[in-house]
Length: 579
Ligand code: ADP
Image (cartoon, rainbow, N blue to C red; front, top):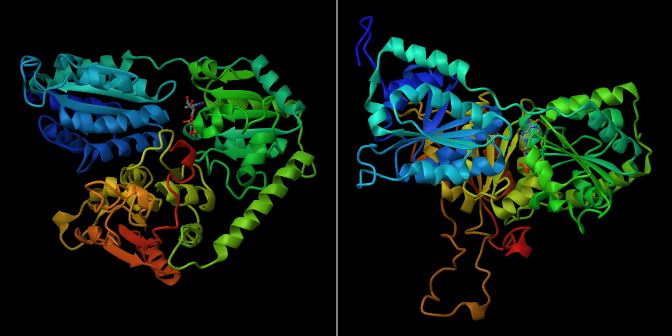
């Protein structure tokens, strides 16, 4: 195409980068290579921070978590074929968690498709089942429109993953700068945001009436409320009505775990006995026992607040309020303001929850107070909890994965601020840890990031410690200088030591280690030292405390390898019934 105004024409890579920038993208995660290296380089020149990973899977997890933490789609860039397939892990994780994310992949030349081109795959079809929108750009002139479309789609309505396919031939086409500008302006006006109908006032009135007349009301909130930033409204609702609340694992922190109306430590009582439950931005899926007996009372009346009409139709609650959680909660608060009600501290329901919570906390604290060496899970978790609380505000973002490590961490670690917990989520995805750490540090540069993970979870993506690593001496080796401390609970395997009975140790490979075993005493802390970072090996309370103090103060990447008794945990953690 013709060159105008002496400016060189833009090729596809440059136009994608420019379109992303114009759509507000300023962070990207990915792995470069054919045919998208120039896209990443060009994006950086336009002011986008490109965080380069070793593996698309971790980069995809990072993009998904970045979307959750910021509310803006996280962007993953991959190469074609296998790069796209690795990236599917991130897109599917985003879809299942309802987090906004976009995977952008290079793909083979359209002219050779079907004839065995380099890294050929029908990527649009491959990604479709996991995405809200999966589009191929067929011509460079479609670039701005397609970029704006996936960005708006990913964050509208129920958030999720979208996919943008960039064939090599499109990346090599060119347009003049003037034409690019016209296309961009058109795209900016183009696609409208999905319109979410906001619930009517009469529905709000019904919800308030149900809560007002309930004997044992409960407010449950999850990561949908977190993404909606509904924390201020929820705090007001809880505090004006005196209704106890229960966060889901990633809802933790929207209100502090230490709040006097927190029912977390009395979870079974709260969900088993409540008669009206207002559930905000949380699905009645396996994590909430499908809202069914025996965990819930069969007569409980659910009021569901969700941005997805389909979600509400699926669950068939007593009352469904479709809309953004922050807006709906605000409407509820307004309605209550005209005729306030409050259970009060001496209300039998509030008293019962607080009594149970206090009893359970005392029991747990008695266990936690013991210094058990070799370490069980509780002793190091207590030390880590206290160190994290000692940081104060802004509170660190805690990344948690692993069966026993995550289960114990969920009960022991204390969340005091919104969106400060990232874990295996709706899918129970293991291997997300390093990607989430990097996303958290990029999304919230003022916060320390602390990962508390099992050795198995860590191992999925341990090489990514190089991304968080720093070498202040040699400028060219400095990567991203992210303040991430990874604490590995090392019990020598998936769930820990070999738990097979003697009858199970048979057959021609009986002398092999158990399928659950890793190398005992693996020196995970040395991995980060390979890149010039700081590693610690600890096995006693004093060693752990000292490593935490030093690494938290340094705000530099570190790996703390904590030796745990291989038989301290349980197989499948707390999900043994599913095994
Ligand atoms: P948790 O794992 O914390 O229980 P889920 O991921 O199961 O939470 O549920 C989150 C829900 O929040 C999803 O059904 C999603 O549609 C919904 N959601 C996402 N964004 C919003 C929003 N802005 N307002 C209300 N609901 C939302």
